[in-house]
Amino acid sequence: MARPTLFIGIILVVLGIAGFLITGRQHVTALIPTFLGCPILLLGWLGLKSQKEKLLSLIAAIISLIGLGGSMPGLIKLPSLLSGADVARPAAIYLQSIMAVLCIIYLAFYLRYRFAKRTE
Image (cartoon, rainbow, N blue to C red; front, side, top):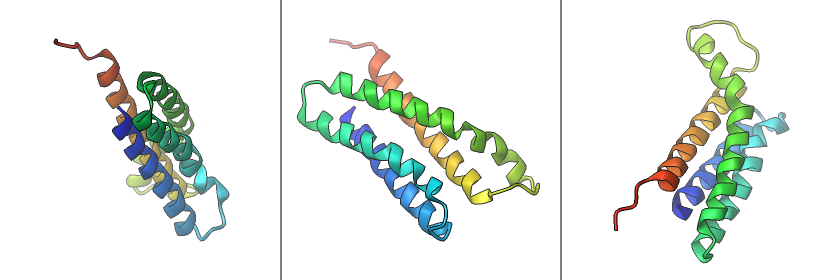
């Protein structure tokens, strides 16, 4: 589970930096995916080196769940934006939606890893 954690952390960091640059470096809130991705990235890296992979992936899943909660407003507004409605801060809606989808994907991987039936 350390590799998916590491991968999602990297993607979130890149998403935040790209969002900050796309918004003209004016909106520090565009870096929120980076602030979320850095601890997830660190937990993934530690998971590669540690025997506590289950605990570290649980902590990463909790961080991802918090990120999902924070990014849900953008995901909820995405259909309005895609239908052509006039919405405030469309870049933020796209970034929040991407972050929400990434968090959902990570949580799905975590749940599959945690609750998969082990055949031995």
